[in-house]
Image (cartoon, rainbow, N blue to C red; front, side, top):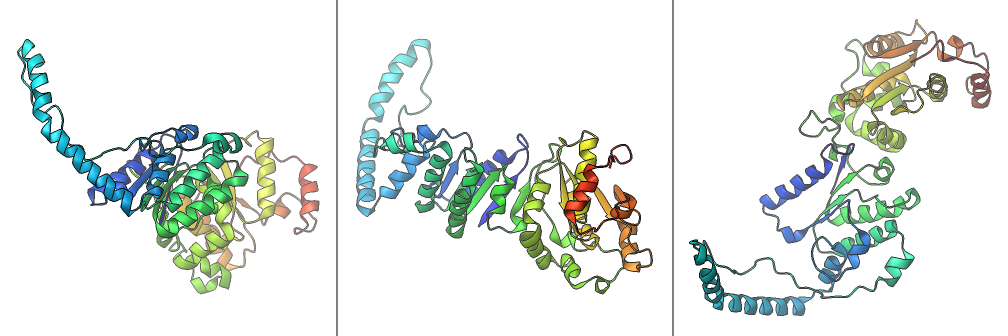
Length: 387
């Protein structure tokens, strides 16, 4: 199982991870079955000689070294320590009673008690030479994830596992997470759409934290998204491929197989321009640059046909994103196009009449991207268009 939490810094992802961990413990999951890797983890500190759980590398290695014999001996040692503690309670109580009585106070409980969370210090020494001198920070984190993969822990929490990694190494990090999720319950909080693109996940398992005024997370509802056709438009009026965008299972398949990279970039953005194809995207980029808006937090999302717009408009608006729809009017005698046009006009939009190529006076072959780019380069549109 893999659950993915996304959202800007300070919007509650880490808190949500901790809350989910607490809920597991409350439901009866033993805390020993849970491992939480912090985003602020200091990877070189992982090689310190301690089994404190904040230093996961040695903690996990110690666990991997355990066998029935060492566990049995730990239990014998633990029982022996408990017996010594119980036999010496009064000794320490008497010491405190003597001191605390000097100011008229009395002891409220035993000075020492048996611990249910014993720690065994310095069970193993990690040779830091290779790890410190031959691995970068990202590779050290990947080594920790490799240890986690072999750990007996069943619930793994990873806060920004992509941290420290160059994008070219994310495929290895993603493979480790895929391996973990095949046999364990994995929860990750991430700022990396590229990492998510490399994972196997269900869209329903993405939690989005992007609204400080909303005490919780948002989810992508594909069921709601596919029920967006105008009432006067029959599904059979659409082409065979377009109909797949109005079926839950097929829409998820389309997102993962056709749109995944763009879809993840879009839901990480604040503003999404939804366009039909490459010519619209190239024109919009040109206009944004000419109007000095190229540095805004936006993404241009291509749907490959305006028949596919409505499910994505629903998804992005429900996530609180600012959506702008850019489309061609097309043939006014085509009733299907006109019904969709009327529906798209309900949103913040720009409509080219009759299409983008004719409106901007491009007379070349619309499929010739090189000629189209040359035309855009040789003309200015910013004064007329500020979409």
